Image (tube, rainbow, N blue to C red; front, side, top):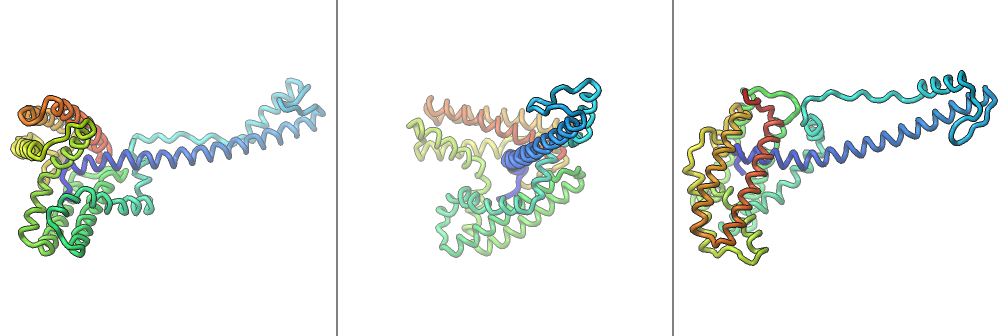
Length: 328
């Protein structure tokens, strides 16, 4: 899986949402446990204090408190309880909203668990490629491992960029360059494994992966309504989406597979990219109008709106994780 800009951003979003939910659950469980312990400790201190004062002042001790204490003893009781009560933990002023998740991601067990999920993700994303190439079991296993290693490397890059500490633009560029070199080396190994013809098919498959993912989601929605795409319509829509995207001229293209520049990852540039993505979707929707039925087109329009919302959320989260600059 190539680590292109938009894929990295959306990866960070998925990582962020899933990881944050896990971290939040852990934190909540830990807080509940500590709260329960603090309440028990408080009750024990209170019982000890009231008994002590009750014995010293020779008063009755009832469930609702000592009976018959004078004002001076009541004040002494309050001071005793205040002295014994565990101090409240000071709230931490943490301006980084992702610091908690960054801390969670440093947990080796969590990182290993996420890497273990990579294989199933690779098998799902590249199942059509495996069918297209018709590889034997040995070659398919070798290819799966190579793709899994790429995905894991992309995950490590994402984790490094959201590690909770500010990363300079120079360091971001360096990490992206390291990823680029690693992918180039991986390409060499893959070309040796597959041969020239099948490696070309792999490259074409990767280039059209954004459209494949969108069409898979769309087809699922259409089939649920009993209006699935014909092979001809799917092929025409695939070509239209791919051609419009690859021929579109961006000011700053976060979907560029080879020239992603992390220093350009600013609020202002993301705003412009979002505007141009909307323009691109308009062009695609216009083309789709000549391919799909009115019912299919309505579902496609809603699917595009959902994708835009997910993309926007992913970029906003990516901006926080990667320490992107605010618009001036």
